[in-house]
Image 1 (cartoon, chains in turn green, red, orange, brown):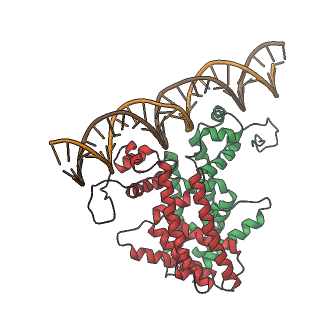
Image 2 (cartoon, rainbow over the protein chains, first blue to last red):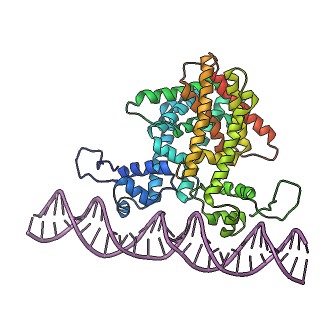
Image 3 (tube, rainbow over the protein chains, first blue to last red):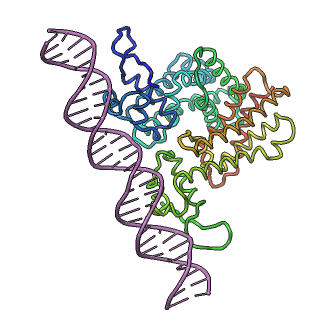
Amino acid sequence: MAESRRTGAQGGAKRDTYTPETLLAVAVEVFLERGYDGTSMEHLSRAAGISKSSIYHHVRGKEELLRRAVSRALDGLFGVLDEPAARTGRAVDRLEAVARGTTEVLMAELPYVTLLLRVRGNTETERWAMERRRDFDARVAALLKEAVADGDLRADVDVRLATRLLFGMINSIAEWYRPRAGNAHDDAEVAGAVVTLAFAGLRT
Amino acid sequence: MAESRRTGAQGGAKRDTYTPETLLAVAVEVFLERGYDGTSMEHLSRAAGISKSSIYHHVRGKEELLRRAVSRALDGLFGVLDEPAARTGRAVDRLEAVARGTTEVLMAELPYVTLLLRVRGNTETERWAMERRRDFDARVAALLKEAVADGDLRADVDVRLATRLLFGMINSIAEWYRPRAGNAHDDAEVAGAVVTLAFAGLRT
DNA sequence: AGAGTAACCGAATGATCGGTCGGGGCAAGA
DNA sequence: TCTTGCCCCGACCGATCATTCGGTTACTCT
């Protein structure tokens, strides 16, 4: 069950041991299977192949693993807003770029984003994650509102409602999408389908 | 915090006490706020305004509350498939009726359906719920496949992918929809927006 | 008034929780 | 070969978990 792990990204072949990052990858998989609250440190130690106490040599505790995971997801999502295609051009085109980019980030960082989407606000870390997620949603809602003002989106459906349904559709990908070995084709197809379905219905 | 509760549905005004049903309503609200695994019997007792041990007078335990909740949700969803509009006519129209009906059930039984959508399979009850949910999805997928065979849906998007995105959009409503006092208008608007957005993009 | 009972409670159960502690093994540099 | 420091371990901690138990209250029925 325990897989081999490498220390760092650089070439230096060190010992075959855990780092916070490689341990995080294992932990997030377990979090997704059992839920964060349903996962004990005992579960994590078994999945990682080391003892419970050894985990504390690499990270401060269970909550730090959660914080690292959701931070990574949030960095990816906010990165989409900074891309050129999301910053220049008509609002409706920037919105489409954000929708496509969000879909791609969700698939590329699947476990981390999935975990972010499931936090409920029980701890301080979870509440912080939810707040940052609301910031992201607000940025997108502003973009969509701008597109409506340009007259590029249909007006017979409420703007807030459409935003929620659009990103609800995108976020729901996390519930079933599982990357395969040759994943480039899958990713493009899914992202394309999202944009096609959503914007064929949204555009005037 | 503890609200008043009535014993039964029939007219006889008995004592102001809990029944399994009224206790369930309280418990499900807490489950949604904190997550099932994140909710302790202590949390439930505080929310219900009775002691921890008193809960066991009404239900066998924590898991029975979960089972009652997801059963209610599943009954509602499968009920949609049995409605006349979902059983007669062209496949594409039945699919639209199922999409609209699912949306309405989701809003009418919001907390119960939301809970169903969040089970992860940690206990036997949760695995049973996931299995029945897969049955429902399979019924819908068959309907969508039939509609494609009729030539009523666009063929340039994969059928399975479209099914998942459509119901991902519908299920995501559980993440933000909160019923108001006069709810009839809200429900109709949301259900209408779902059908409009989805099928304007889906139809040939 | 007295009997019967549904609803409730405080206290305690063993199990499991996240986290701590002192020490052991092993590879690298001296 | 000896020291240093990283990685890991088993044993243990107080807290909290779901659940149980013996008993009390309060209402209904006769």
